[in-house]
Length: 254
Image (cartoon, rainbow, N blue to C red; front, side, top):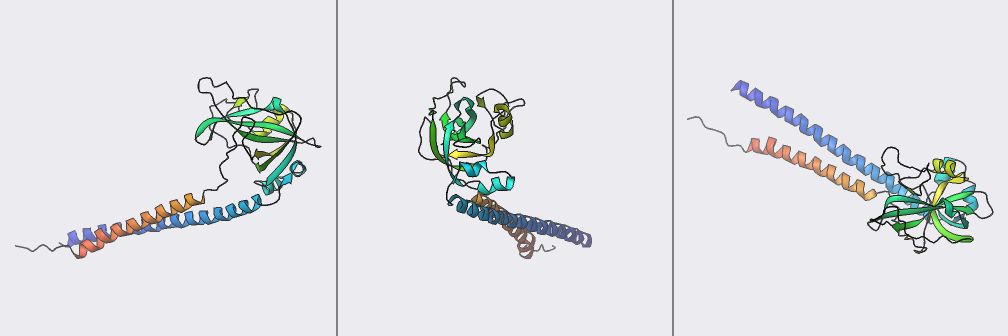
């Protein structure tokens, strides 16, 4: 009887220690997700405030020199004047808009009264699923143009096969585009940020860009899951290790 009770006590304390560790770990992960949500919430508010600032022009973009200066203008509204360099238009493959597959169309814009060039993400066109190389017609007006948009980084990089064209080749259809490689390829004095053209659809392009969001709700969801798991572990421990022990019927010897 004594050895059986000792065995039960050993198991009880082992399970107790494991349960306490699991509850503490999952609760800590929940708090960490809440901290991440708070950080991203602050960044989102700063980003939204920046988007409400007055629009900047091409001269401000051409004057950017340091990474800090570039970071300071990300998501700012912008108004540009210049002319398209249509011969350098690039189509980024496997890009979605409205749940449909297609291409992002990028064309450099030579800024008015400046040697600087800005890479503009002009919009989206659908792909031809019968012929990948068949590109939807896009109108690129000659002469001077004006456009509105917001300052952005280059489009997100997608996974590509080894040896894929990332902006250092001659193909108009590419999986990714690296600004440094594209600058070397074209010889254009590209500024270190791009511009996402906004406004109405036109020129054969859709511009229904998704809202800029840092995914704060995602972290709240993760925190809820971790706290829920922590509560579940605690509940199961109390039920199986305490409540059932207290109310377990005692066996009577014959």
